[in-house]
Image (cartoon, rainbow, N blue to C red; front, side, top):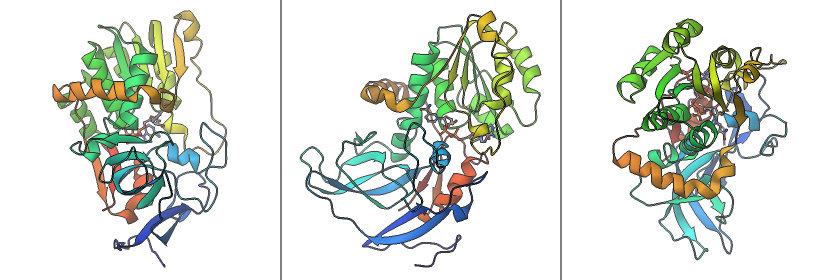
Length: 346
Ligand SMILES: NC(=O)c1ccc[n+]([C@@H]2O[C@H](COP(=O)([O-])OP(=O)(O)OC[C@H]3O[C@@H](n4cnc5c(N)ncnc54)[C@H](OP(=O)(O)O)[C@@H]3O)[C@@H](O)[C@H]2O)c1
């Protein structure tokens, strides 16, 4: 089928719409890096289920998977269905553990229908009354990332000063709220005044800095005169360096991500101020959320309690239309989203 970006794609009854990786991105992702295709709906085999996706998640890591380099997951080959997290409903089941009608999330790809045996991480079952935007957001991969990154790597204590970059995004907004729940003072960095107002007004951050218009170093000097106890890094680059220069004794730097470098084409400068880790007896540690998959149920229980108590809130940025998927990934890197970005495909 011929597809031009901007066309609405009608949902056919027996069609599996897909986006494939058509080209390796050079710098920022472009629409032409994707190819649209329609196939017939697959049939699940013995021990498998067929899932009809309703919401597909956009994640910064998708950019890395489009490149031809080994990472913590295998790179995609040209012509592969774009890898993506999603949530949907089991519409046919040949698996005794998973009934038709169940709401499930997992790595289902940029497509309407996926077949799964339930063994591929992070396949998860959610009760049908859980809002899919919450299951893919606060309780989804980015929520789990915030939970384990902040609590297990950051080890917050009441009274700690916590700084979070990418604070108005899916991961950062949850990490900041968990730090508040743990009694910390929390400062967020985000790319617009509206996002900063949301962080302080709705989520309870103590202050927020617009890193595009304000002097981040001067603002952090003003807000954190005794230094930063935990820096939860989602962006890397210059902001990581500014924070490294301001760490307190025994600080923890949680390397969650480095979105400022994901579209870079040449060699990247390392952090200049890393030696402060020695002077301040500090620790800088990265992690990958999937390593915590065995503990997702525990985190979900705890976080559901915080949601019920009104201590944990989310905003989802939901874009409508399957055909918007490539553009939505591009928008993620332009800061279009507040909270979790996803496309509703139905
Ligand atoms: N370690 C893990 O297991 C794990 C798992 C999930 C995610 N992550 C990482 O966590 C980070 C956040 O991911 P997410 O899914 O929650 O995405 P997100 O924060 O919801 O969305 C990305 C945000 O990054 C900001 N941004 C874009 N380009 C930037 C740049 N050049 N410099 C600074 N900020 C930029 C934009 O907000 P502004 O308007 O504020 O610029 C954008 O909204 C990413 O680095 C991701 O790779 C790690």
